[in-house]
Image 1 (cartoon, rainbow, N blue to C red):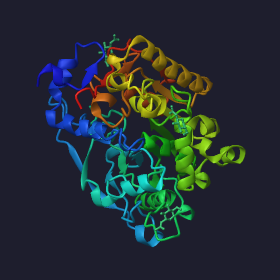
Image 2 (image 1 turned 90 degrees about the vertical axis):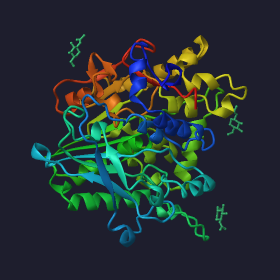
Image 3 (image 1 turned 30 degrees about the vertical axis):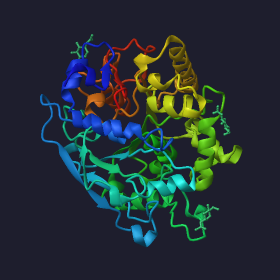
Image 4 (image 1 turned 45 degrees about the vertical axis):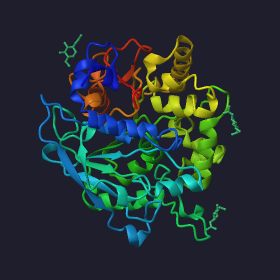
Length: 436
Ligand SMILES: *[C@@H]1O[C@H](CO)[C@@H](O)[C@H](O)[C@H]1NC(C)=O
Ligand SMILES: *[C@@H]1O[C@H](CO)[C@@H](O)[C@H](O)[C@H]1NC(C)=O
Ligand SMILES: *[C@@H]1O[C@H](CO)[C@@H](O)[C@H](O)[C@H]1NC(C)=O
């Protein structure tokens, strides 16, 4: 594959050819398709398919891949816990072994949100709204891998990948459904409750250690449900939460419009999220504000860890520079590849990073909070081996994301790892959508 076709840069350039060789053209066509739809399904597509590009086995270190079958939720019908289209939600589970038998790791899939009747209806014919379109098996890699080389601390835990098909981070409530014959279900919270019951009765009730994780909209679901999850488990259990790219800041776009705030207002209103959001927060502000982690993180009692790229490409495209805020397309090339950005655009991106760091500064002194905020143009980084833990994965202070999360979870070190500003870190993987 010629060099000009690669879609993802290493910061320093030295690794780009190597990275390029590891990816097949087909993988990148899949990722390109995902990104091409980004503009059309505004705010609704996460880089789920992009991340497939990362799962190609590394010949040097990867054993046979783990393909894990889909398990439909058994009490779905009884509890009316259904996807947007009424289909049965589900998950993929791999059993723990050895010393990991009583430890549980849950990973919540992402995929944006739907904020209108029509965008939710559109999801019904995709896997983000219907299990009829979900893969019957998925590959477990990164934080879900059973290989100690790829996943040093959690490889032998019970692992569950939770599929996302409600469009509101598992927080929708049926009271908000249209009562006029529109066949659209808002059951996110019901799915969550039913799923937790099922996992508790299949062994999770005995968990001695647990980690609730998720990426993007799943990272937000992780934060929203973190304290409730903790309450489900024994008082003696060590329970923590890890949000990957789940910190969506309430920031204005470059035209001064509150794009993400309006969008969240619509999601929260449409699917009746108020009931599921942090009660202390909802008591004191408009409910949609409580969908922003900056408004409720401080009241969480459970230890949390944030893996957050400071130059999150999803945030750049949907929060900072949505298409409406850039009518002349001056940001078009920059949003495809951060190396295309001109100095004034880089300044804007640095500003976005600075406000993120400012929001996170109040957690610097809290020992239970962990952070890995790297300066990469990427989105989710925990469930791909290449970004989670490999000889070439992103590092801060020479620690990978997997090592940092392990250091925090097992209290080996206090972990507040904040990267220097772009483009200083040569270990970054940066997305490149230029040839999509
Ligand atoms: C149901 O109500 C919604 C919201 O008012 C409306 O947009 C939709 O068209 C209605 N559906 C039917 C089948 O009348
Ligand atoms: C700002 O938001 C308003 C209301 O949502 C919208 O009508 C307008 O087009 C937006 N302007 C820009 C530049 O995004
Ligand atoms: C970084 O860590 C690796 C092991 O993970 C070690 O081999 C290497 O020497 C370290 N590099 C530096 C500069 O400390």
